[in-house]
Length: 358
Image (cartoon, rainbow, N blue to C red):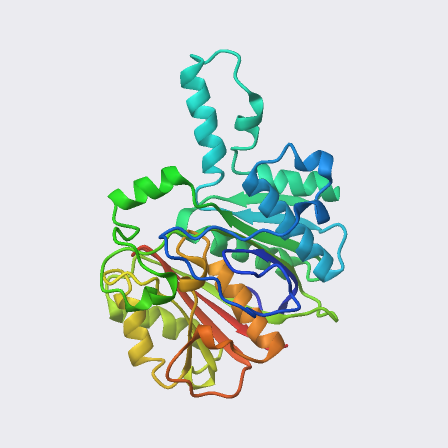
């Protein structure tokens, strides 16, 4: 457990395969995909980024910068005290362009833009330059634990100084080179699956997704507060159901939260018949009498997809309702005060995030 203080999400900005960039609405319409790759729906970038600067940025940098800008506007913050970003693989398309050019030109007269925009910390640096933030700046590139590590870092920063405003965000793109590699490893499905039918699939693999989500965290509650974050727990490669269950119970005990106090369980299963087994076991055993929510049919699977789940949890707690497309029957609770997110990436990276209504 990180400290004993309370931490709050005071601003959110998210761009995903759904229409999520308007915080006034909460999934008013659902976009379904017939292909196995879910790409982000984007707003008018010129509303958030200077047009002169805009033309120099890659697609994913535009998405990430826009999500961060929207988050800061939502929180009423111009300059954050710190910036922490998280990504599983970084800017793969720009990295691919750089490597291809290096081969084609035999390492001569290379375009520096591809290299600069392909580094992992390009987005954190861009946000810092744009907001004139000279404070703490860090980027986590730890595959399926990237966002959880960034979140833990942010909470530790706030444990030392709760008056800070820490901007934390994630980004991962659905690059073609990653999709081809993922197919070989059976990370993604071979057969075509409609995204809204994902959880009816009985085959291995999931759908490739992407997105960028930013959150303004602080130890102080404001008029724009969405919810409170109580704690986050990382579990690496549990051996079996008993091992994961033990980690969950220890996490809840540390936070003085009985299972019966959890109103909503957000389940990070991805429609993968083989890798979903542990979370499905928790769903049927521990949370059989808890309102259940699933989300990866809306955003797809990627290293930092848990940030999409965090947006869902914050939205449920702030708006006090659950869109029908998220509910996985049966639904029990009409009380929406405490939410637990349980996520996994592949079969190694498991995590729990506990949130509450402020």
